[in-house]
Length: 235
Image (tube, one colour):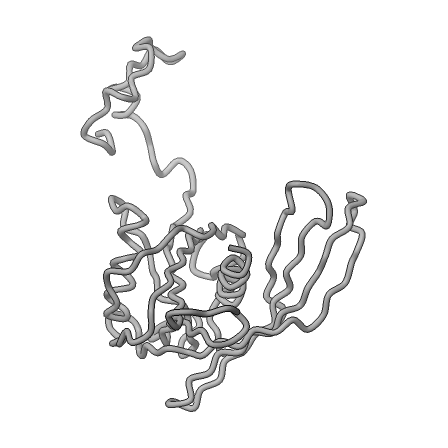
């Protein structure tokens, strides 16, 4: 009945709980349907760059896939998908990237976890985002539930920056970034405006990313891309 075959590392002190159950009987009666659980997806932000680059504002490319199904059908999204119940998240994002774009064997790191309840109309979905940096020249082929896959030139520009005092009395820096993604070959231009805010003082900056507007980019993926670019810039 246990989810894992090997349960010895979870035996603790070996005593019974308040209901008189040992670990085996507890697991046998454990009901996973008692609580609603979120689904988990994994998305990959693949940034293509020249051998040497000095700025994230232009000169980079991002890999996008065109959605074949609802929600956001026909819009462009980052490659990714649902994590299987017995699949490690790192393996899931590699699998989804390969299935949807044909891209394999890339070095990547986990970037952030997005968990707001409003993110997807299908269910409560938590997304783990990953970032990969690769050299130019990688070909892509759409597959699985991707109707198309392509590289888009990135243009990122700062539009406005203001200081505001929040309800905690902290000064927050709020910056509007305009994100433009262009594929000249397909004559496609995608765009979004993302607000990035953080505490001006203190060690804990409490970064927040909010999509103000979006044009043909699926879900909240514009803020994934902006966060990745700013992370590269700070590195």
